[in-house]
Image 1 (cartoon, helix red, strand yellow):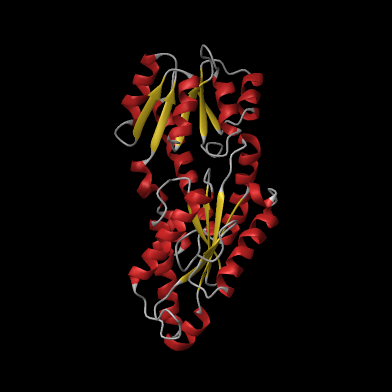
Image 2 (tube, rainbow, N blue to C red):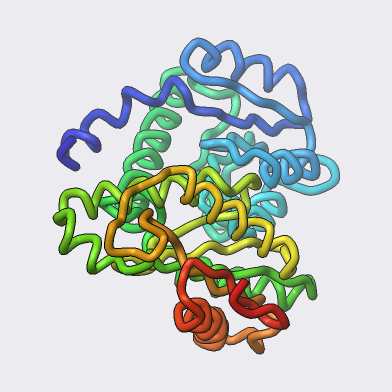
Length: 314
């Protein structure tokens, strides 16, 4: 579908939107529920602390947040959510019964996208919620297009490069480790020369789907790094766990039984190199080069191999 039609039809998907209402007074939550529940899924909590936990676990599409609450205030809650990578893009509309000029400034400075005064005007509430949800949906479409590989439908190199930097920052904070797999389809140029580029594109899509299906955790992700090369990042995973994933991938590629008469295996296969971020001195290019060096070892050992530190060309 053309991008203009996707953006114009953004409202069509709003019925699936989740809105989190945060207010220490249940009667206010009930009022908003009565106004919005016919159009959206409404979640609710009465404290900023619970709101943060809920958002970290399952980020909603929009938050309606009371400014004045016991414990964490709405402003403090918003500021914390805006500092977290997983929640900073959630649009937050403040609800407040006090709106002096300094209060408005505080809402903007702490990350709010809008504010509504209490008691809420039903028409104002509905229209502002709809407008901000539509804008978020359109923004998500454009961001998704920028980070998704057009052929395979998985993440592209741009997303991988940005995500890897964030993963390094996370490891520096938590002192954990993560594994990186770099994979290359064996003799793919010969495959294209033999079967044609249409068959080659189909093979890339099949491989991408196999890689995606091999990942079991929501934090794991696969990207097309370029041409016939793919990368997988496995957060909080060490070499033994990464090796297990690599073996499962190779077994599933073999089961796909994609004919490749120019290959020694006579079917499409993958060479894989594995490294971990900690072993690569936690520098972006070092991590990639380290894993790529083991990919090279898999290739020179005959391809269709897995290579990694302390275990080469299995």
